[in-house]
Image (cartoon, rainbow, N blue to C red):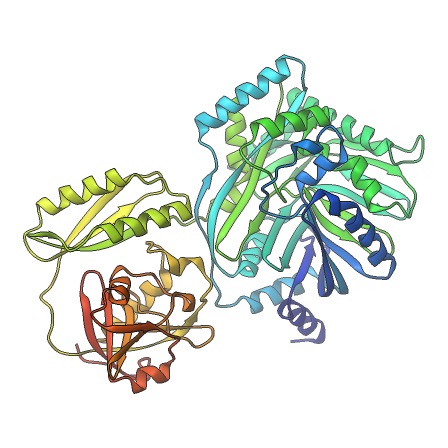
Length: 612
């Protein structure tokens, strides 16, 4: 690894960092590291002071990089300030003050990202919109009524994809970076959250006294072949409706820029230009102006933010309509991500095609389109889905699972299983009706004549089904376990819920059962034992029993909870290591179907085979 690559690698592993990337054409990207401080405004009263401090840090020679949320724009109009939502998922703004910046060639950044994330996984699971198509169409009918009444000419109406994410956010960024090549991409690994942005749209770029903006308005899908692709691009370029939408936003931004520019300097360039991306064509125009070179960031934002391309026109009245009709605050989405540099230059994107990720596995990405008087609501819904394809084309789905023991006399217990699946459904956004679950279980029990495992499966839409598998007779001999060769991340949300998507567990179970092992035990990043692929772990030393705490990265198993609370054994939760496996008097694995199964620990299971 050469010196520059090593410097980039160190920047990506030394704490919070950020990347601003342009991988569209022969361009360079920037990696920012060694943050001095993070400037955050949670409440309106903090905003002016934080913006002033940003100017101070920049004047002192630092790079100020982060995001401004869409809702920050409410504070820049007295008419909108009262609309600011009290509950917001992210601060109004968060800016890291970075002491180091590396300029990186695109190929080098790709190589370092590939090496840094080699062997890591990144998956998006159960991606779904926060409203149904009928709900969306009803809201658009109300939007069009506002247009008919003369309240607005155009509304950029948005909705959100909600999902869970598993694995490395940096790996996800690396994959999306390949899938969607853009000029204004970003990756923010900040304390408490991560942002992945594949934005093709510039909000403002300022160098010395020159400033310009490039609003995007107008979308067309790519063709199946070259000829159709060219026809689609040509249609977008000449479409009267699209041109009308585009010029409406261009006029809005010309007006906004005129408030901070020198008289007579506002110009429009490249009107109705069509740019082609991996999954769509976009219409783009450019507006330029001249401003004072030392323009404070607060003045820029107060006059221009948020970008008119993601509100509509007229801006203030349209933002009121958006507030009334959208389901939830936009947050970072349609705000702006970018940097203000020590030379007073700035480059801020429009935060579209932008994912917000939290450590507990939650994630979201907004999408939207511009609505005018003759918009076709179904076509607009389809356009929104098209814009999300770069994310949704590779989404894995999963369902919630409960495995219950049942024989001719009925279930051993149902209440704790139903309580757990209801809790997981609530946490993960699944529809769930307890009565439906109970009916499915009751129907399945009628046909059970011998000891069986009944698997209850719940889909995101609330539909459920059962699978019944007759159990083999229990074995009396002691079975072998070993330690998995890979570690798990204890903080991942995936261990807290019983779901069908556990590829690592499936792979390890299949590999080791082929070698004759009953199960394989995992340890987390700290070396703490967690669980098996389908069992919780218990050890006995003397009269006392031990089991790993949930904080180590453990599924809250039904049988585990019963053993902890029933009082039959003296059981405590305690962090355990592989040495505890070696020194335990007895080792047991347990689940709600098999109960307690005594096992023996075999060292070096990767090299050793065990007879069945």
